[in-house]
Image (cartoon, rainbow, N blue to C red; front, side):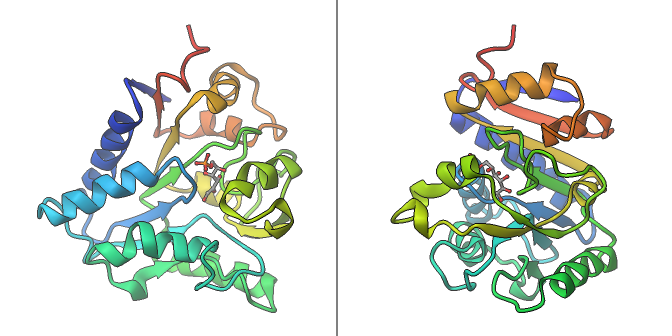
Length: 242
Ligand code: F6R
């Protein structure tokens, strides 16, 4: 595991942007796995800026998002589909037919999960997966206790995750209870993984990620088994590390 501690969130975002651009530039048909949430917002801003400066084109990029809330349509302002449109897709030259987010409002979730997996397989799997880190150690929405061998599946969100994400909704009651997420095994098949963690609220999770034992109780602990993981932290998130 390659660990980078950046001075602050802007540097973290800039570093992450460079890793993404490097993947885009070194592959003929780059396939990116993307995350939502607060942490990658700065990286997306930096990518948009790089695109505006003609430093990178997304023309040949395909993207698969990690997860989506069940019950939210793609135009719902709180859906991850909408988040991606707002934070990246509407601002770069990506082919919108090549951007995939798990469907939150399908009647047949099992089929949707199978189709999502097949689509990734058809695209020769992910070149780079960007991850945030849940305060409970989740990656994607794979909550503590999720078996390591899961593929894309539907899950019930932990109360702590719903509380952490309530800031985006009018009230906690509006936060969906379920989501579709890439599985842990799916994430681990990505050729490279980039995990970002920023801020004081992540310091315990970061400490456990880097010092704790491998256990499904802390899903991110599986990442030690992957051969190409870069963890980018800001100083606050790294503050418990010696
Ligand atoms: C988002 C995702 C989640 C978040 C995590 C951290 O697509 O899969 O695992 O990365 O909950 O969220 P933030 O960045 O908001 O702290």
